[in-house]
Amino acid sequence: MMLSFRTGASLGTNTHQFIAGATAGFEFSYTTKQGIVLFLRQKNEVVFWDDDTWRVGGLVG
Image (tube, rainbow, N blue to C red):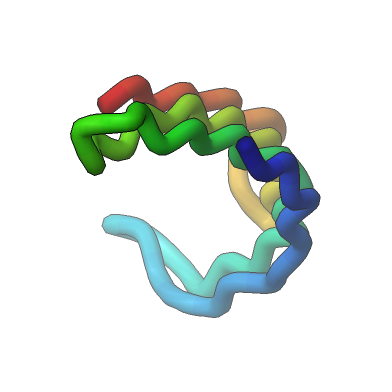
């Protein structure tokens, strides 16, 4: 069982202009006795110079 916190930054463009973002979130993973890895990842991103200021995402696998 492992819990890790993730941070990062992004640079790029959308359809109109240059954008930048700051990202924070966490990842939880668990390995079963059979060797199968289950994980849950959550991500929050604040985007600068764009109308869509907040992006929130999740991933389960």
